[in-house]
Amino acid sequence: MTEQTKSKPVPDISETTRPFWDGIKSNEFRVQFDPSTGAPQFYPRSTSLATGRTDLEWRAVSGKGTVYTYSSTLVPIPGFEDDVPYILAMIDLEEGVRILANMVNVTEDEIEIGMPVRVAFEQRAEDVTYFCFEPDS
Amino acid sequence: MADTPPKNHLAARDVVIAAYGETRIERRSGKTPYEFAALAFEEIMSKTGLAPADIDGFATNVPHSESINQYYTSYLCDYLGVTPRWMQISDHGGGSALAGVSRAAMAIQAGMCEVAMVLCADTPSSSWRAANGGFRVAFWDPTGIQGPPGGFGLLMNRYMAQYDFKPEALGKLAVAQRDGAVLNDNAYEKLRVPITIEDYMNSRVISSPVRLLDCVMYADGAAGVLLTSTERARKMSAENLVFPSAYSEIVNFNGREAQPDITETGFSVVGPEVLAKAGMTPSDIRMFQPYDDFLIAEMLQLEQIGWCGRGEGSDFLLETDVSYRGILPINTGGGQISAGQIGLASGMTNLVEAVRQMTGQAGARQVSDPRNALVTGIGIIPYGRNWLVSNALTLEQ
Image 1 (cartoon, one colour):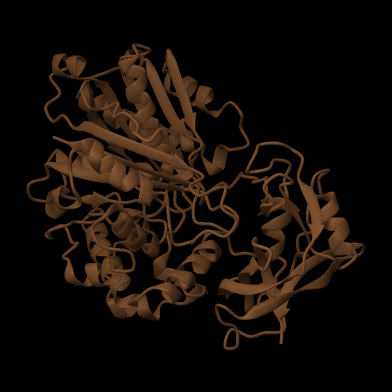
Image 2 (cartoon, helix red, strand yellow):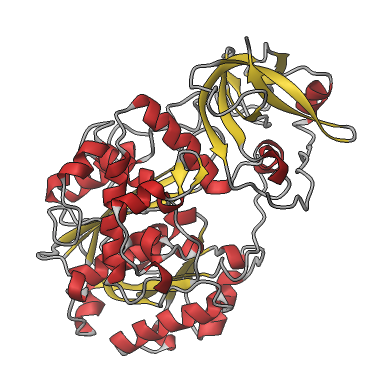
């Protein structure tokens, strides 16, 4: 194992993404929806991809979905040396968006495409919460 | 967008590629992009008899190693003694070389310039000075994703779940490309060793299912082409003219879809479109020089440009001789995977090999009847989708 020399990155938070991170801190997963079409979108940003307006609405969602695809990382980036092998996944949420996240509480032998998962939360640093996903069994 | 396909701005054969230049590809050379650019520039000057004062158009890529320099293109012109009346930098990632060629042709047609250098250089294995913002700072980097191998691991695993994937098909492609690199004096020296399908299958996993021999290796180097009007080229008595005959690009393919099929790429649009513009079908293509950051990307291109159906890439590769002797030669100089990826200049590696083949200068790996080629570019991994830039250029004698 390579020695861990660096801590894991923490998210840069902007004015637009702050409501998302406030939600994560209170263990709530929030997604933006276009008010006229009802279409959800992710990652958080200012612009509605449907209309070009900046009138997106935040809603708390279930945090439940399924694994769309995954990859197990054997060569880590700095800060993740102690986690090897760690699993990255794309999660398709029930509400219709796709999330990139780490999978926890599951091994590469156990995970499969289509597996039901739910959001979980990890303390990344003092006062910084990040999101991940785990099997929803 | 209108229902009619975009116009083919290259249909009139009024612009030509008159020369190419390429340095040897090195690892950890300790050199700068300027130094490599100078060598490729010198080769083109020497082949054409031109001097720096004759170049009035200049296009390049954003290099990883100079991407925090907001004045790079002007500095490069200054370094080379070029005084362009038209200048362009492309940040299409690996699509930058072809984007530069397309735009240089437009500039020549518009009368902005007459002799345009499209010169791409990068030295990421010696100096990495890039900082990507956007979604990455909050939703990408904190996940620990292993850069492009992580992104392509996610893509490839999904492909394997949706389709009948046979890893030996990519192994066969890896071997064919490596055989080309062995015969390519400009390929990175340490990659000029033959490999077998077993070597591919046994190479270590980086981000599952992506193995080491699925991936490119960052390297340093430069390559470029000189474009001019057909009229001017004839006056220069350039002997081997290569005509760019059709070009298409798409950026942010399926960018408004929240849960798209990650295996579907922009080549499903630009592949059939560029061939229609050129009046060709896949079976007319004499050689394919595809952008190859990962082997799976080449399989997706074969399917979506139209050599075979979706999910049929494995059988197509296993049934087709893709070596330089074959019916569809692919990346005859080793591609980036076996010659080395010169950072964001790398799309020029595939293009220069096509021009070299089409002008009969490929030596021991020369393709017979090199009357045309299809070259592609790929750029930039987005959030939760495929890739952001797909572009394609046909070349004809």
